[in-house]
Length: 233
Image 1 (cartoon, rainbow, N blue to C red):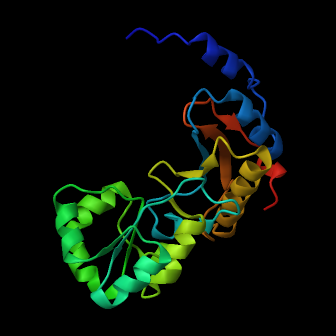
Image 2: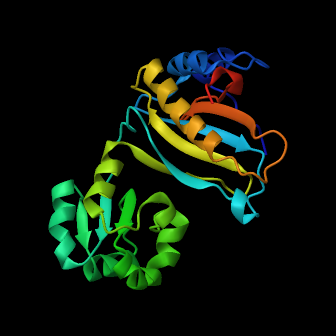
């Protein structure tokens, strides 16, 4: 297969990231503003490779973090709930709420939402669509606060910038932390919040180097390596 040639713009962007250099979080956040290749407001993501074995239950990290500056994206929320909770869901800002109607929609292939929240009492019904929600990262889970009777609070937290993350099979966490339109300080502060949260979650059984590598990148930009020592953990 022929190697795809880099465009002039992409070559210029890659050239700004010095080969072999590990950047401070502050410098990486500033540089990220210069190497973005999109004309739209691209997502800013952090990629963290950890020294964990996801096959071990206690090292299969999963959690949530509230970003100081939010995600920059309005998240669409679906709430599976009983009729007595629908008014609470509506008042808190959920775009969709109900039960059987939305179970049927999901069974038909509809998953046009970012977060799914559910009451514990309806989870028996939700189980039948787990094979659809699960692969898309939408299945409600008590570990990330999306199975709860406090529907209103859960929705408000999501709307304010609460995001979930989980380590994949390769031991890497990918997490969206904002948009290209954020200033460098906002990007750095959101990234630091994610890194610090994951640092506090280090499993006692994980040996050796915990943070193996950190990278910041936008949707189509080159990845910028970060020195973990530049982050307060």
